[in-house]
Amino acid sequence: MGDGAEDRGNALYGPQPDVAGASGYPDAPPRVGFFTDTSVCIGCKACEVACKEWNAIPADGLALTGMSYDNTRGLGADAWRHVAFVEQRGPFGGPEPSAAQDDAGDVDVFTAAARISPASPDGGTGLRWLMASDVCKHCTHAACLDVCPTGSLFRTEFGTVVVQEDICNGCGYCVPACPYGVIDRREDDGRVWKCTLCYDRLGVGLEPACATSCPTDSIQFGPLEELRERARARVAQLHAAGATDARLYGESPDDGVGGAGAFFLLLDEPEVYGLPPDPVVTTRDLPAMWRQAALAAVSLTALAAGSFARRRR
Figure 1 (cartoon, helix red, strand yellow):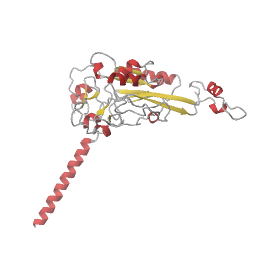
Figure 2: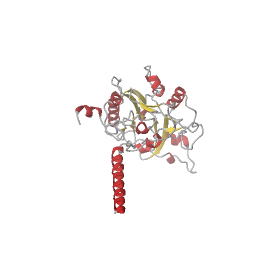
Figure 3: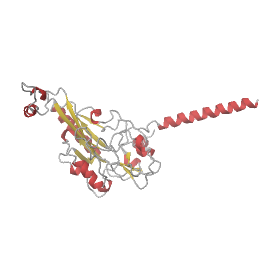
Figure 4: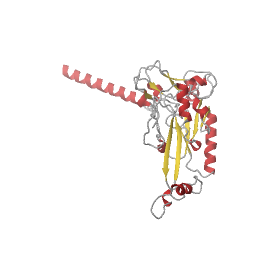
């Protein structure tokens, strides 16, 4: 492979340094994306509200699910942002609230609450909340885009992946193709919908609505390479403070999707947040599959020809 081909990267998997250029934008601006620092997410859901208001997304999640404060459960056609609430009990240090019982066995909730201290490097507490605002990953190698038969899904000059709802025919091929389970069909019209990273706002120099509304700067928007540098520095800072479980998810160009355009800083394993531990673009093996299919077709043709020749004799 020549140097030019190496610079362009592989079309289906692996690092791709120039995503927009590979999609036909020779003079594209730097690729942009999201860095979500879950260590400072407070679960306010401002991002969910801002996303719905700006994009005129139908209301959903109006009924309690019985899953803590998580009333939307996950991403979907009517939930382009989803704030996960994960309540954990564990050996974080400090006494359990059940220790605050009187002689009659009743729990004094005020005393119990006072015994719970913030997590710290030397132990933390017996209870903690993990909160994270999930969104479409805008993958470097987007299987949803690869399998779309109408061109409804396309790569923008900013490196993001957008659905053109007026072209979508509702075939649904993209839904199982997404390794994150992000894209979904809307029940009332059958078409698919997902985060556009506010493509209309980017075109006029504005930030996405969710990032603008985040009060703690948990959702950070900007050039992807700058965000990766900032994220690595933040992980180092947390490790120095004793939060050794802090890790990045989706930032590496060497992962199964070539690196995500929206990546995260997590404080626990990805599965805890409802994220796949090792996502792989589902179209990665298409060339090998087509080769195997062609080999099978040639073999069947040869067998049929051989059987026909024997019959004539």
